[in-house]
Amino acid sequence: MARAGPRGDDVVAVMSGREYHSVIRPWVDALLEQDPTEDCIIWPFGRTSKGYGEFVDQPGGRTRAAHVVICERTHGPCPSGMEVSHSCNNGRGGCVNPAHMIWDTRTGNRRNAPNVVLTPEKAEAIRARYEAGGVSMRALGREYGVNHGTIRAIVTGETWKP
Ligand SMILES: [Zn+2]
Image (cartoon, rainbow, N blue to C red; front, side, top):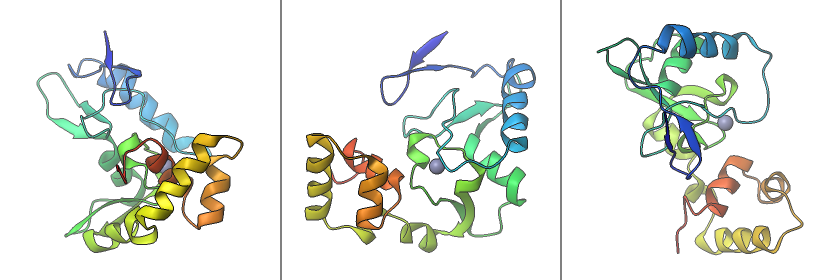
């Protein structure tokens, strides 16, 4: 069964927990074994209304946040007072690329927030340039000194809504 994801795309709803051992766990194992990649890797299963990946770890089990579980398996248990920080700022886009996640303090995590780096005027300029076409998110990110995940968040209206 599929349901619409936060962006309107179909995501596989794997929320009963029955699919954990046959589908989700092998997917996560393969993710952790593959060579690091630069691009965001989007969680292909169920997502929260905020866009983060989620799954149920056994029938009747508890719901787990996919990015937290993958960060735990990459960097060890979450240190006290810390949370997952996405270097790509694409956590709400469902990114679970282990190379994009570290444990950081909440303050440090905010440091990554686009509004620290960009003004609303700059964000508006980025959106206009992207909508005009002919320029990639990556090129805009380089030009403005921010990650392409930040650019994506701006052009999709996830941040800096007018
Ligand atoms: Zn990412």
